[in-house]
Image (tube, rainbow, N blue to C red):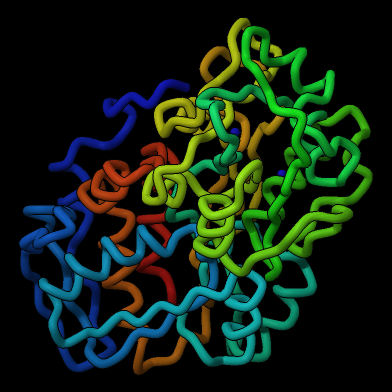
Length: 375
């Protein structure tokens, strides 16, 4: 870490997906199948979960998917008490680093693996290498906190200039031109970006590189390159800062905007109307995502420059990074069980209710095919 309205019919029927969740051949001690109760999370009531393996399953990385992982852990843990899933945030960069050091069984990354990261993974994936498995669909909200302003429209150029300190006042002519009838204050903009290496940053900067007409002068990267502004760690940190600081702006995954009751800017894309930051509009864009990875790797290309009606361009996919071969025998059965559950239709719909975007069925079915082949 180079995608229409959300239509439930695009997903495989629940019966077909559940039929695909056959118990995996166990390499560990347990091989049972049970039903998740859903619990307080409401996740995947009635989902059949193959509980193979036992012990602790460790993951780390993307903070954008943290809320999704929390939902899934609750349902999976209720169904599979012999497996404890522990996930630490820290950002996509830190997660991939821990994975390539052999510290975790999977890493969450909002950006597909770079060639150097794949090469490094061969040291821990004996006889294989790390691959990208799309698991969490979402979108990046450009969140703002401006007194007296409830609605804001921005485009690629203005977002780039704001986060690079080229636009420094809220009543700058470039912003007011996009917001007729909105009274914007003569106040300094407090721009807040990620301090840690972040896949969310990589997706935002990829969008800016394609849509800012040259205003964003830096290559897409997990590491922040814009000038000025303040920084905060993780999606939660950025959300907290924007909520606290008046006249501020930041970028977080939609579920963090919703959890913190933050306002999100609409994006002017060239479509007839600015596009609001909603899961349904994010699904319009993700429905056009194409697999660009080879073999078992399912890295995706997203069309950040889309001008399709209702297509919210600032979308992302969080990948679970795993070994195609060379996974640790002690954790492989639990890893396959957990991933098989998270890509199921009930699990995807559960996080869809919390601001994420259920993956299109075409992508989900590809992931379901790969998981049993992990070794």
